[in-house]
Length: 46
Image 1 (spheres, rainbow, N blue to C red):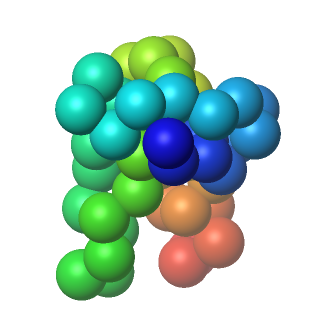
Image 2: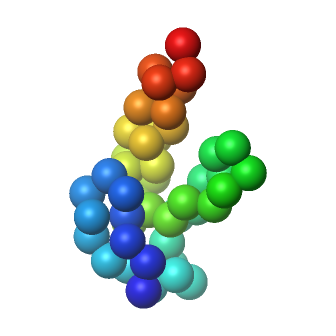
């Protein structure tokens, strides 16, 4: 199980949505959470 960094829900690694940011892989419960995370990361870099 992996923890979604946006909603903090635990999901099985095999069914999680993934995104790589800064060379690190993050796992999400849904595409919505992945998009929110990527928007937050983009906002922090500007």
